[in-house]
Image (cartoon, rainbow, N blue to C red):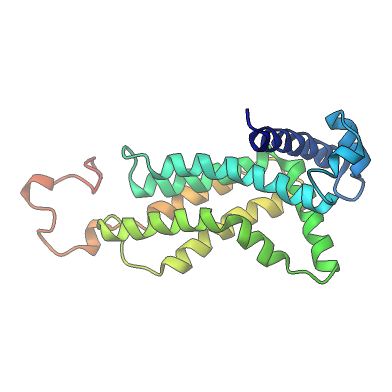
Length: 221
C-alpha cells in the first residue's frame, strides 16, 4: 500500500472516531486532546493530518454527507422506481437519517452557531455541503417533467419545498427534541405524489383505449 493511500486511510479512521467525540462531547467541549486520545495517538501525530478542531469537524461532516449522498444516488439511478417514488424515498431517507443521528444534528447546529457568531456564513457552508444532493433532486424533478410523469412547475420552487421538509425535520429533532418524524416522511410522499400529472390535467383521449381504467403507473385509480 502506497504512503498516500495509507495516509488517506488513517485520516478517514481519525474522522470516524472524531465524529464520535463530537457527538458525545458536543462541539464546544471537544478538544484536540480528546480526539487524539479516542484515536490512540498523540496530539503531535494528529497535527500531521489536521490543523485544528474546526477542520476535523468540517471533514467529519463531509464524511457523513458523503454516506448519505451514496444512498440517495442509489435511489436516483434505480430504474425500477418512478420519479415520484424516487423523490419520496430520497426525502424520506434524509428525514429518517436526521432522526437516526439526532445528537449529531444538534452538534452541527451548534457548530453553525459558532460560524455565525464569528462572522461567517452558515447558509453558504450548508449549501456547499448539500450541493450534490440538490443536483440529484433537481435531476429527478426535471426527468419527471420530461417524461410526462410530472406536470410542469418551477424546479427551484419544488426543490426548495423538499429541503423545507428536511429543515423542518432538523428543527423538530434538534430544537424541539422530538424523536419521531414519521409525519414529515408522509408529508414528503404526499408532496411527491402531488407533482404527478392527473387524468383531469390531460386532454381527452390522451391515454388511448388501452389505458382506460388505469392511472399513469398502470394501476387502477
